[in-house]
Length: 190
Ligand SMILES: [Fe+2]
Ligand SMILES: [Fe+2]
Image (cartoon, rainbow, N blue to C red; front, top):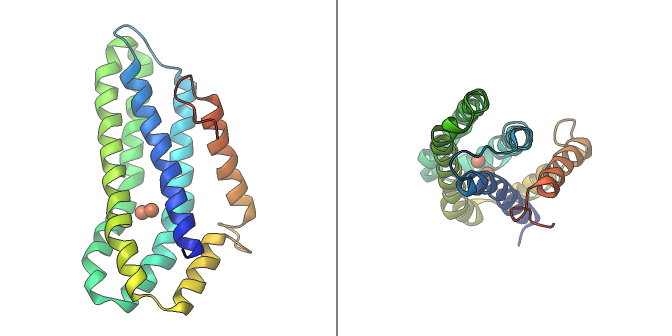
């Protein structure tokens, strides 16, 4: 498999794990209980850094740009995904505001926040499914060897001020911290 495809899929898996973990933690709470709010702050910070700063710009600037040049038929799905990338910070802000409200309200805020987090999980899951089920197969058919070399370099993060080793190390360590701090039985041990 192309190196960049492997990295994209790995990044999707990590994001899904974290968003899904938040949903599971909330589902496990019993009436009257509240979660570890500062842990959920970390989870939302990770999602924000990972998606908006790191993963989506790479998809926009490399994968989507090159696919659009090679396959006019991909235009509609690319526009849809770009629109979702733009909507992502707005949706996440709603979740962050919801968490602040839940924290202020205490246990009776649980249901409202649980619904917000479940909506967010659905939004992210559908987005990842469209990329893996539609866009990556189109890219595998349409992109040239040169295109893939460019995408591989971008996703490998060499010598880039935003996506370079520093950025990568930072997101990696955020991910590990979340996974290590997760309350049992929600950690992943990796
Ligand atoms: Fe995306
Ligand atoms: Fe993605």
